[in-house]
Image (cartoon, rainbow, N blue to C red; front, side):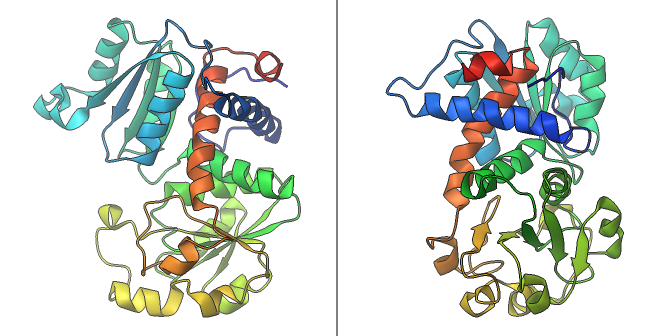
Length: 312
């Protein structure tokens, strides 16, 4: 039950013990969220600043709500209208925000490594809300937390991640997290989006959808990351859907009780049919709900909170 990190930057650097400590802390905060007054004073008097240089709905709102549930004061900046548009460097931006008495910074940026860079500069906690195509640690944590709720643990489970792997920070973070928790991960999609190099991260790679889904306990769909692609990796969305979109027939290739996941936003009718996204085997909205408890746990622990105290 130990967490000695100031920051949450990557899943790659976390141990399985640290991940489980965060999960047990999130369990406690999920109970808080179920109360009539769903609030705790853990971050009272703290100033949390959201710096989102890329668009976001779920992650930004979840971090805002998580901080407020912990009784923090929250400032969310529209970085498209900030001084960075005038040429101010990222370093100057975050150092000025620190000088304005920020206690915790949450950052999403298009540059891989940006969160780690500012974490080394600042003496306050920095939480990575997504850095380019590198990592998205809280998304992977809430994904695995959701599966843990369904299964008890992930040991021995087989999970397919289907879609745009090459440009996905969610896929990278989930590979690290799922492997550390004992699951077997298979990446599926066209060869242009699922290169063999991902095998070096400990995942299997397949371009044959039917065989890849055959024995899986869960499938996670990923949208096509158009904003990160320099050129199209396939002829058209229709062609991608015809070969790799998850429909009822293809879902029947999985185990009967298989779980459907998606980090959002969903492109209905492209990577997944609407009927499946809204089915009883989908945990997509549960992922969103769990994201609040997981981000409360991350903020609490990085601020120096003791996991044992939260659980008690």
